[in-house]
Length: 155
Image (cartoon, rainbow, N blue to C red; front, side, top):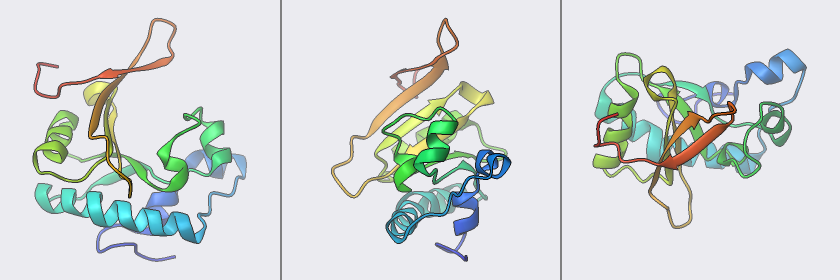
C-alpha cells in the first residue's frame, strides 16, 4: 500500500495480529487513510524527529469489528485512524508522554498505559483538542481503568 509519511507506512498502522488470527478485514477506507496521514504528519513524524529514533506502532487503525474483538472502547479513536499505541525502543514511556506534551505536539489524548511495561496511546483530531493526559491501569477486577495523570509527579 505504501507510505503515509517519510517514516510511517500504511501497513504498520493497519497491521492487526487479532485480525490476521481471526480472518478479519482491517482495510481502511479513504477517509481513514486521510486520518492516518494526518495522525502521522501532525503527531508521529514530529515525535520521531524530536526523539531522533524510530517509533514502533503496536496498534493503529482498528476496524469496528477488530476493535470490538479486542475489547476496545466503543468510542475508540483507533476506529477512525486517529490514534496509535506505540513504544519507542530505548526510551521510557513516561519520557515519551512528557516529550509529546512539552514539545507542543498537537495531541488530543495521551494515555500512559500500564506504566513502563506498557505503551503510550496518542490520538489526534481535526477538531478542538482536549490535551487530556490519563493513566491506564488494571483495576481490582482486572478491568482497565483510567484516571487523570500528571506525568511530572513520581510514577
